[in-house]
Each structure stands twice: as C-alpha cells, then as structure tokens.
Image (tube, rainbow, N blue to C red; front, top):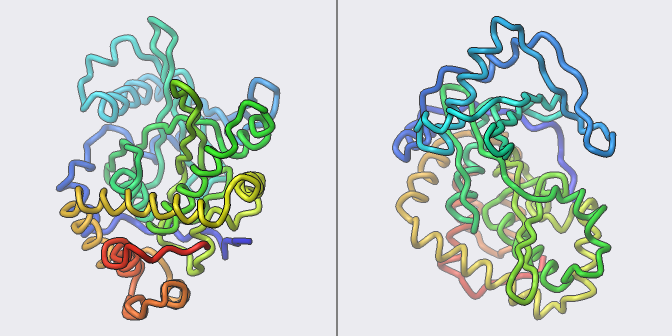
Length: 347
C-alpha cells in the first residue's frame, strides 16, 4: 500500500521554469489573479443532485466586485479556449464560482454557461505550484492526452478535464455487466505505467477520471490524471504506482481476474514504447523542460536520496545514484525507455 508521507510542500514557479513557460507560450497576461477571488463575502456548501456534500463551496462576491470579476473570468476562458478571441464572450455568463477548501492549493472552479444553448464548461484558478506546472506539461507531452493551461504571475489557470471521477466510477459503474473488464484492466496497466515512468504520484481513485469511449464494436477506456501536485515529489517508488493505493483495489481485482503476467507485461511494454515515441517526437521541448527541472528544487533533499536509491535498486541501474534532484531522476527514468527498451518489470 502506498502512503503519502505528509502534506505536499508547495514550490513557487522559479525563473528557469518561467523562462521555459514563456518560450512555449504558457505565460499569459490576465486582469485577475487567484488572490482576487479570495475577496468573496460569503460561501455555502455545494451539494450534488443526490443531496450529497461535494466538499466544494459556492462563493458570493459583493455587488461592487462581481461585475468586474465575472467579466475578467470570461476573458480568461477566451484565453484558454479561443487563443484570446474575446468575441466568444458574447453569449457566455459566469454561473458559479466554487472553492475547494480541503485541497492543497484551495482551488477555485468556475462554471461558465452559453446562454444560447445552456451548454456549460468549467475551468480552474489555483496557486501556481511548480510541481503541478511540471506535471501538467509532462502530461501534455508524454501522455495520449492534451491539456490547456497558462500561468500569470503566481496564478495557474487550467481547463477542465472531462470524465467520470475514478472513485465514482468504481462505486457506480464497475458492477455494470456491460463493462468490458479486460479492456478496463488493460487501460489501468497502461495508466499505471505512464505514472511510474514520468513519476506522477498519488494517483488514487479521487485523482483520476475515467473516459468511456464508444467504438464500433466495443467500448474503450481511458484513465486521465486530474491532480498533478505530486509530480516528482515523494521519496518512495510505490507512491508513483497507482496499483499500490487501496482505493484502486477494485480495479486491481479486475486485472488479477482478467490478465496473466505475460499479458500485463505486453501492455506495459506497449505503453513504454508509446512514451518513447512521444519523447522522440517532442525531444527538443522535453529536453528544455528537463533542463529547467534539473536546475529547480521541487522536493526535499531526503526525498531525492530515498527515491534515487529505490529506483537504482529496482532497475539495477547505478545512474540513478548520481542524481542530485528530482529533475535528474526523471531524466534517467525517461532515458531507460530509449537506452534499455527491453527492460520490463511487473511492479
């Protein structure tokens, strides 16, 4: 079982990371920041359609603040969805702004509605924690998923990632006889491998979503991370393997029933090969990102030492022991895909 040692320590966006973000157009200028949303006057609990507490609170702004805040939030939506084209704002209204008080970064979630057809979307405004920024960028470059985000000063703005929350999927969907357990087990193996190779931790069922994608004969599944705070932070190998979180045990059980070790190894190999291909395609940008990461501090020194030792033992690769920070450890982890492509392990 994987256990998180303590509450995540936030790290500010360093000049070297900010330079990378500017080069690849992840820096923007907006007229509202995270701290501006903290000026709300009141908040009340938000319940779902079944009357259950969502652990989010809807905030209320003063009349003097609300008009300008809502206008600037619509401009942010235009930035992340339409490359700053403010003409998309014409029929949009801010329906609700919520805050999650129990999250590490206490994020705000904005619900925006198109008045013409009542279609709605969300986006998030958070403190710009460097770990999360690295995690988002690695997700965009190394996973099969694209994700839009921008940084303004110390504010991080992210698009909403669509899907069924993993814990909800396990509780409400997993027992459905129409679920293709073999395909679902295959996707969990691939997701497990993606997280481990790029060192994304804390992927228990509340931190990923499940996409169900109809195919012409069957349904395919895609597991997508939605929380990137634990990118290259923890000092223990098992934290980077979703299979070791007890919340994910129902998915593990499906894998044990439907997969042999040989089949699991095949899917593990497939996923590593796909990540290696993405590395080759985006190698210049990824090298720039790793260059920033290796000059940045995003984890305590004792976490770096313990993780490099565990990975050196696991892979039987002494190069890990020469790493002095998390960026260097990740660089070696990705190097393994190219230099030792025939090394595959059942975790």
